[in-house]
Length: 130
Image (cartoon, rainbow, N blue to C red; front, top):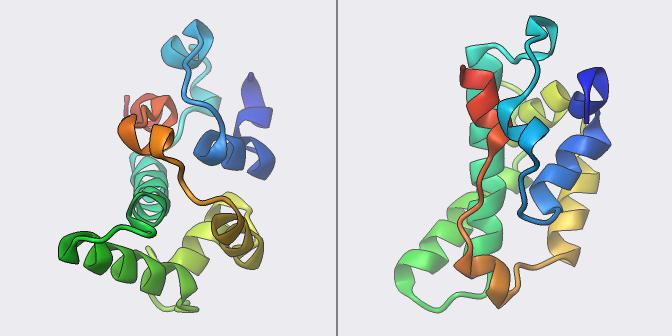
């Protein structure tokens, strides 16, 4: 993806729910500073992606720690808190997502065992922080 289409809601959701592979142009990015994210926006994306991954990774797990992680992530995702910059609904708005649609997608697509074994690599976050 190049330029502005990289930051479209559909592209960002695909990054969260899509396959785990990185193409050279995704890793190295472009030299166009207009497409780089600010450090604050990169941090917001990292919080958003981590919250979703924690929810998916912990869903249906049996250990006490994993159940607590799931409840914390679920509480964060389901809460309609507009007063905190890093709330789920504010982050959804920041990235152009409909919170109800993201919640629905999370409930429809639980993490399978193969996904749980892989550690997700987030070139978008690394690129943004550079």
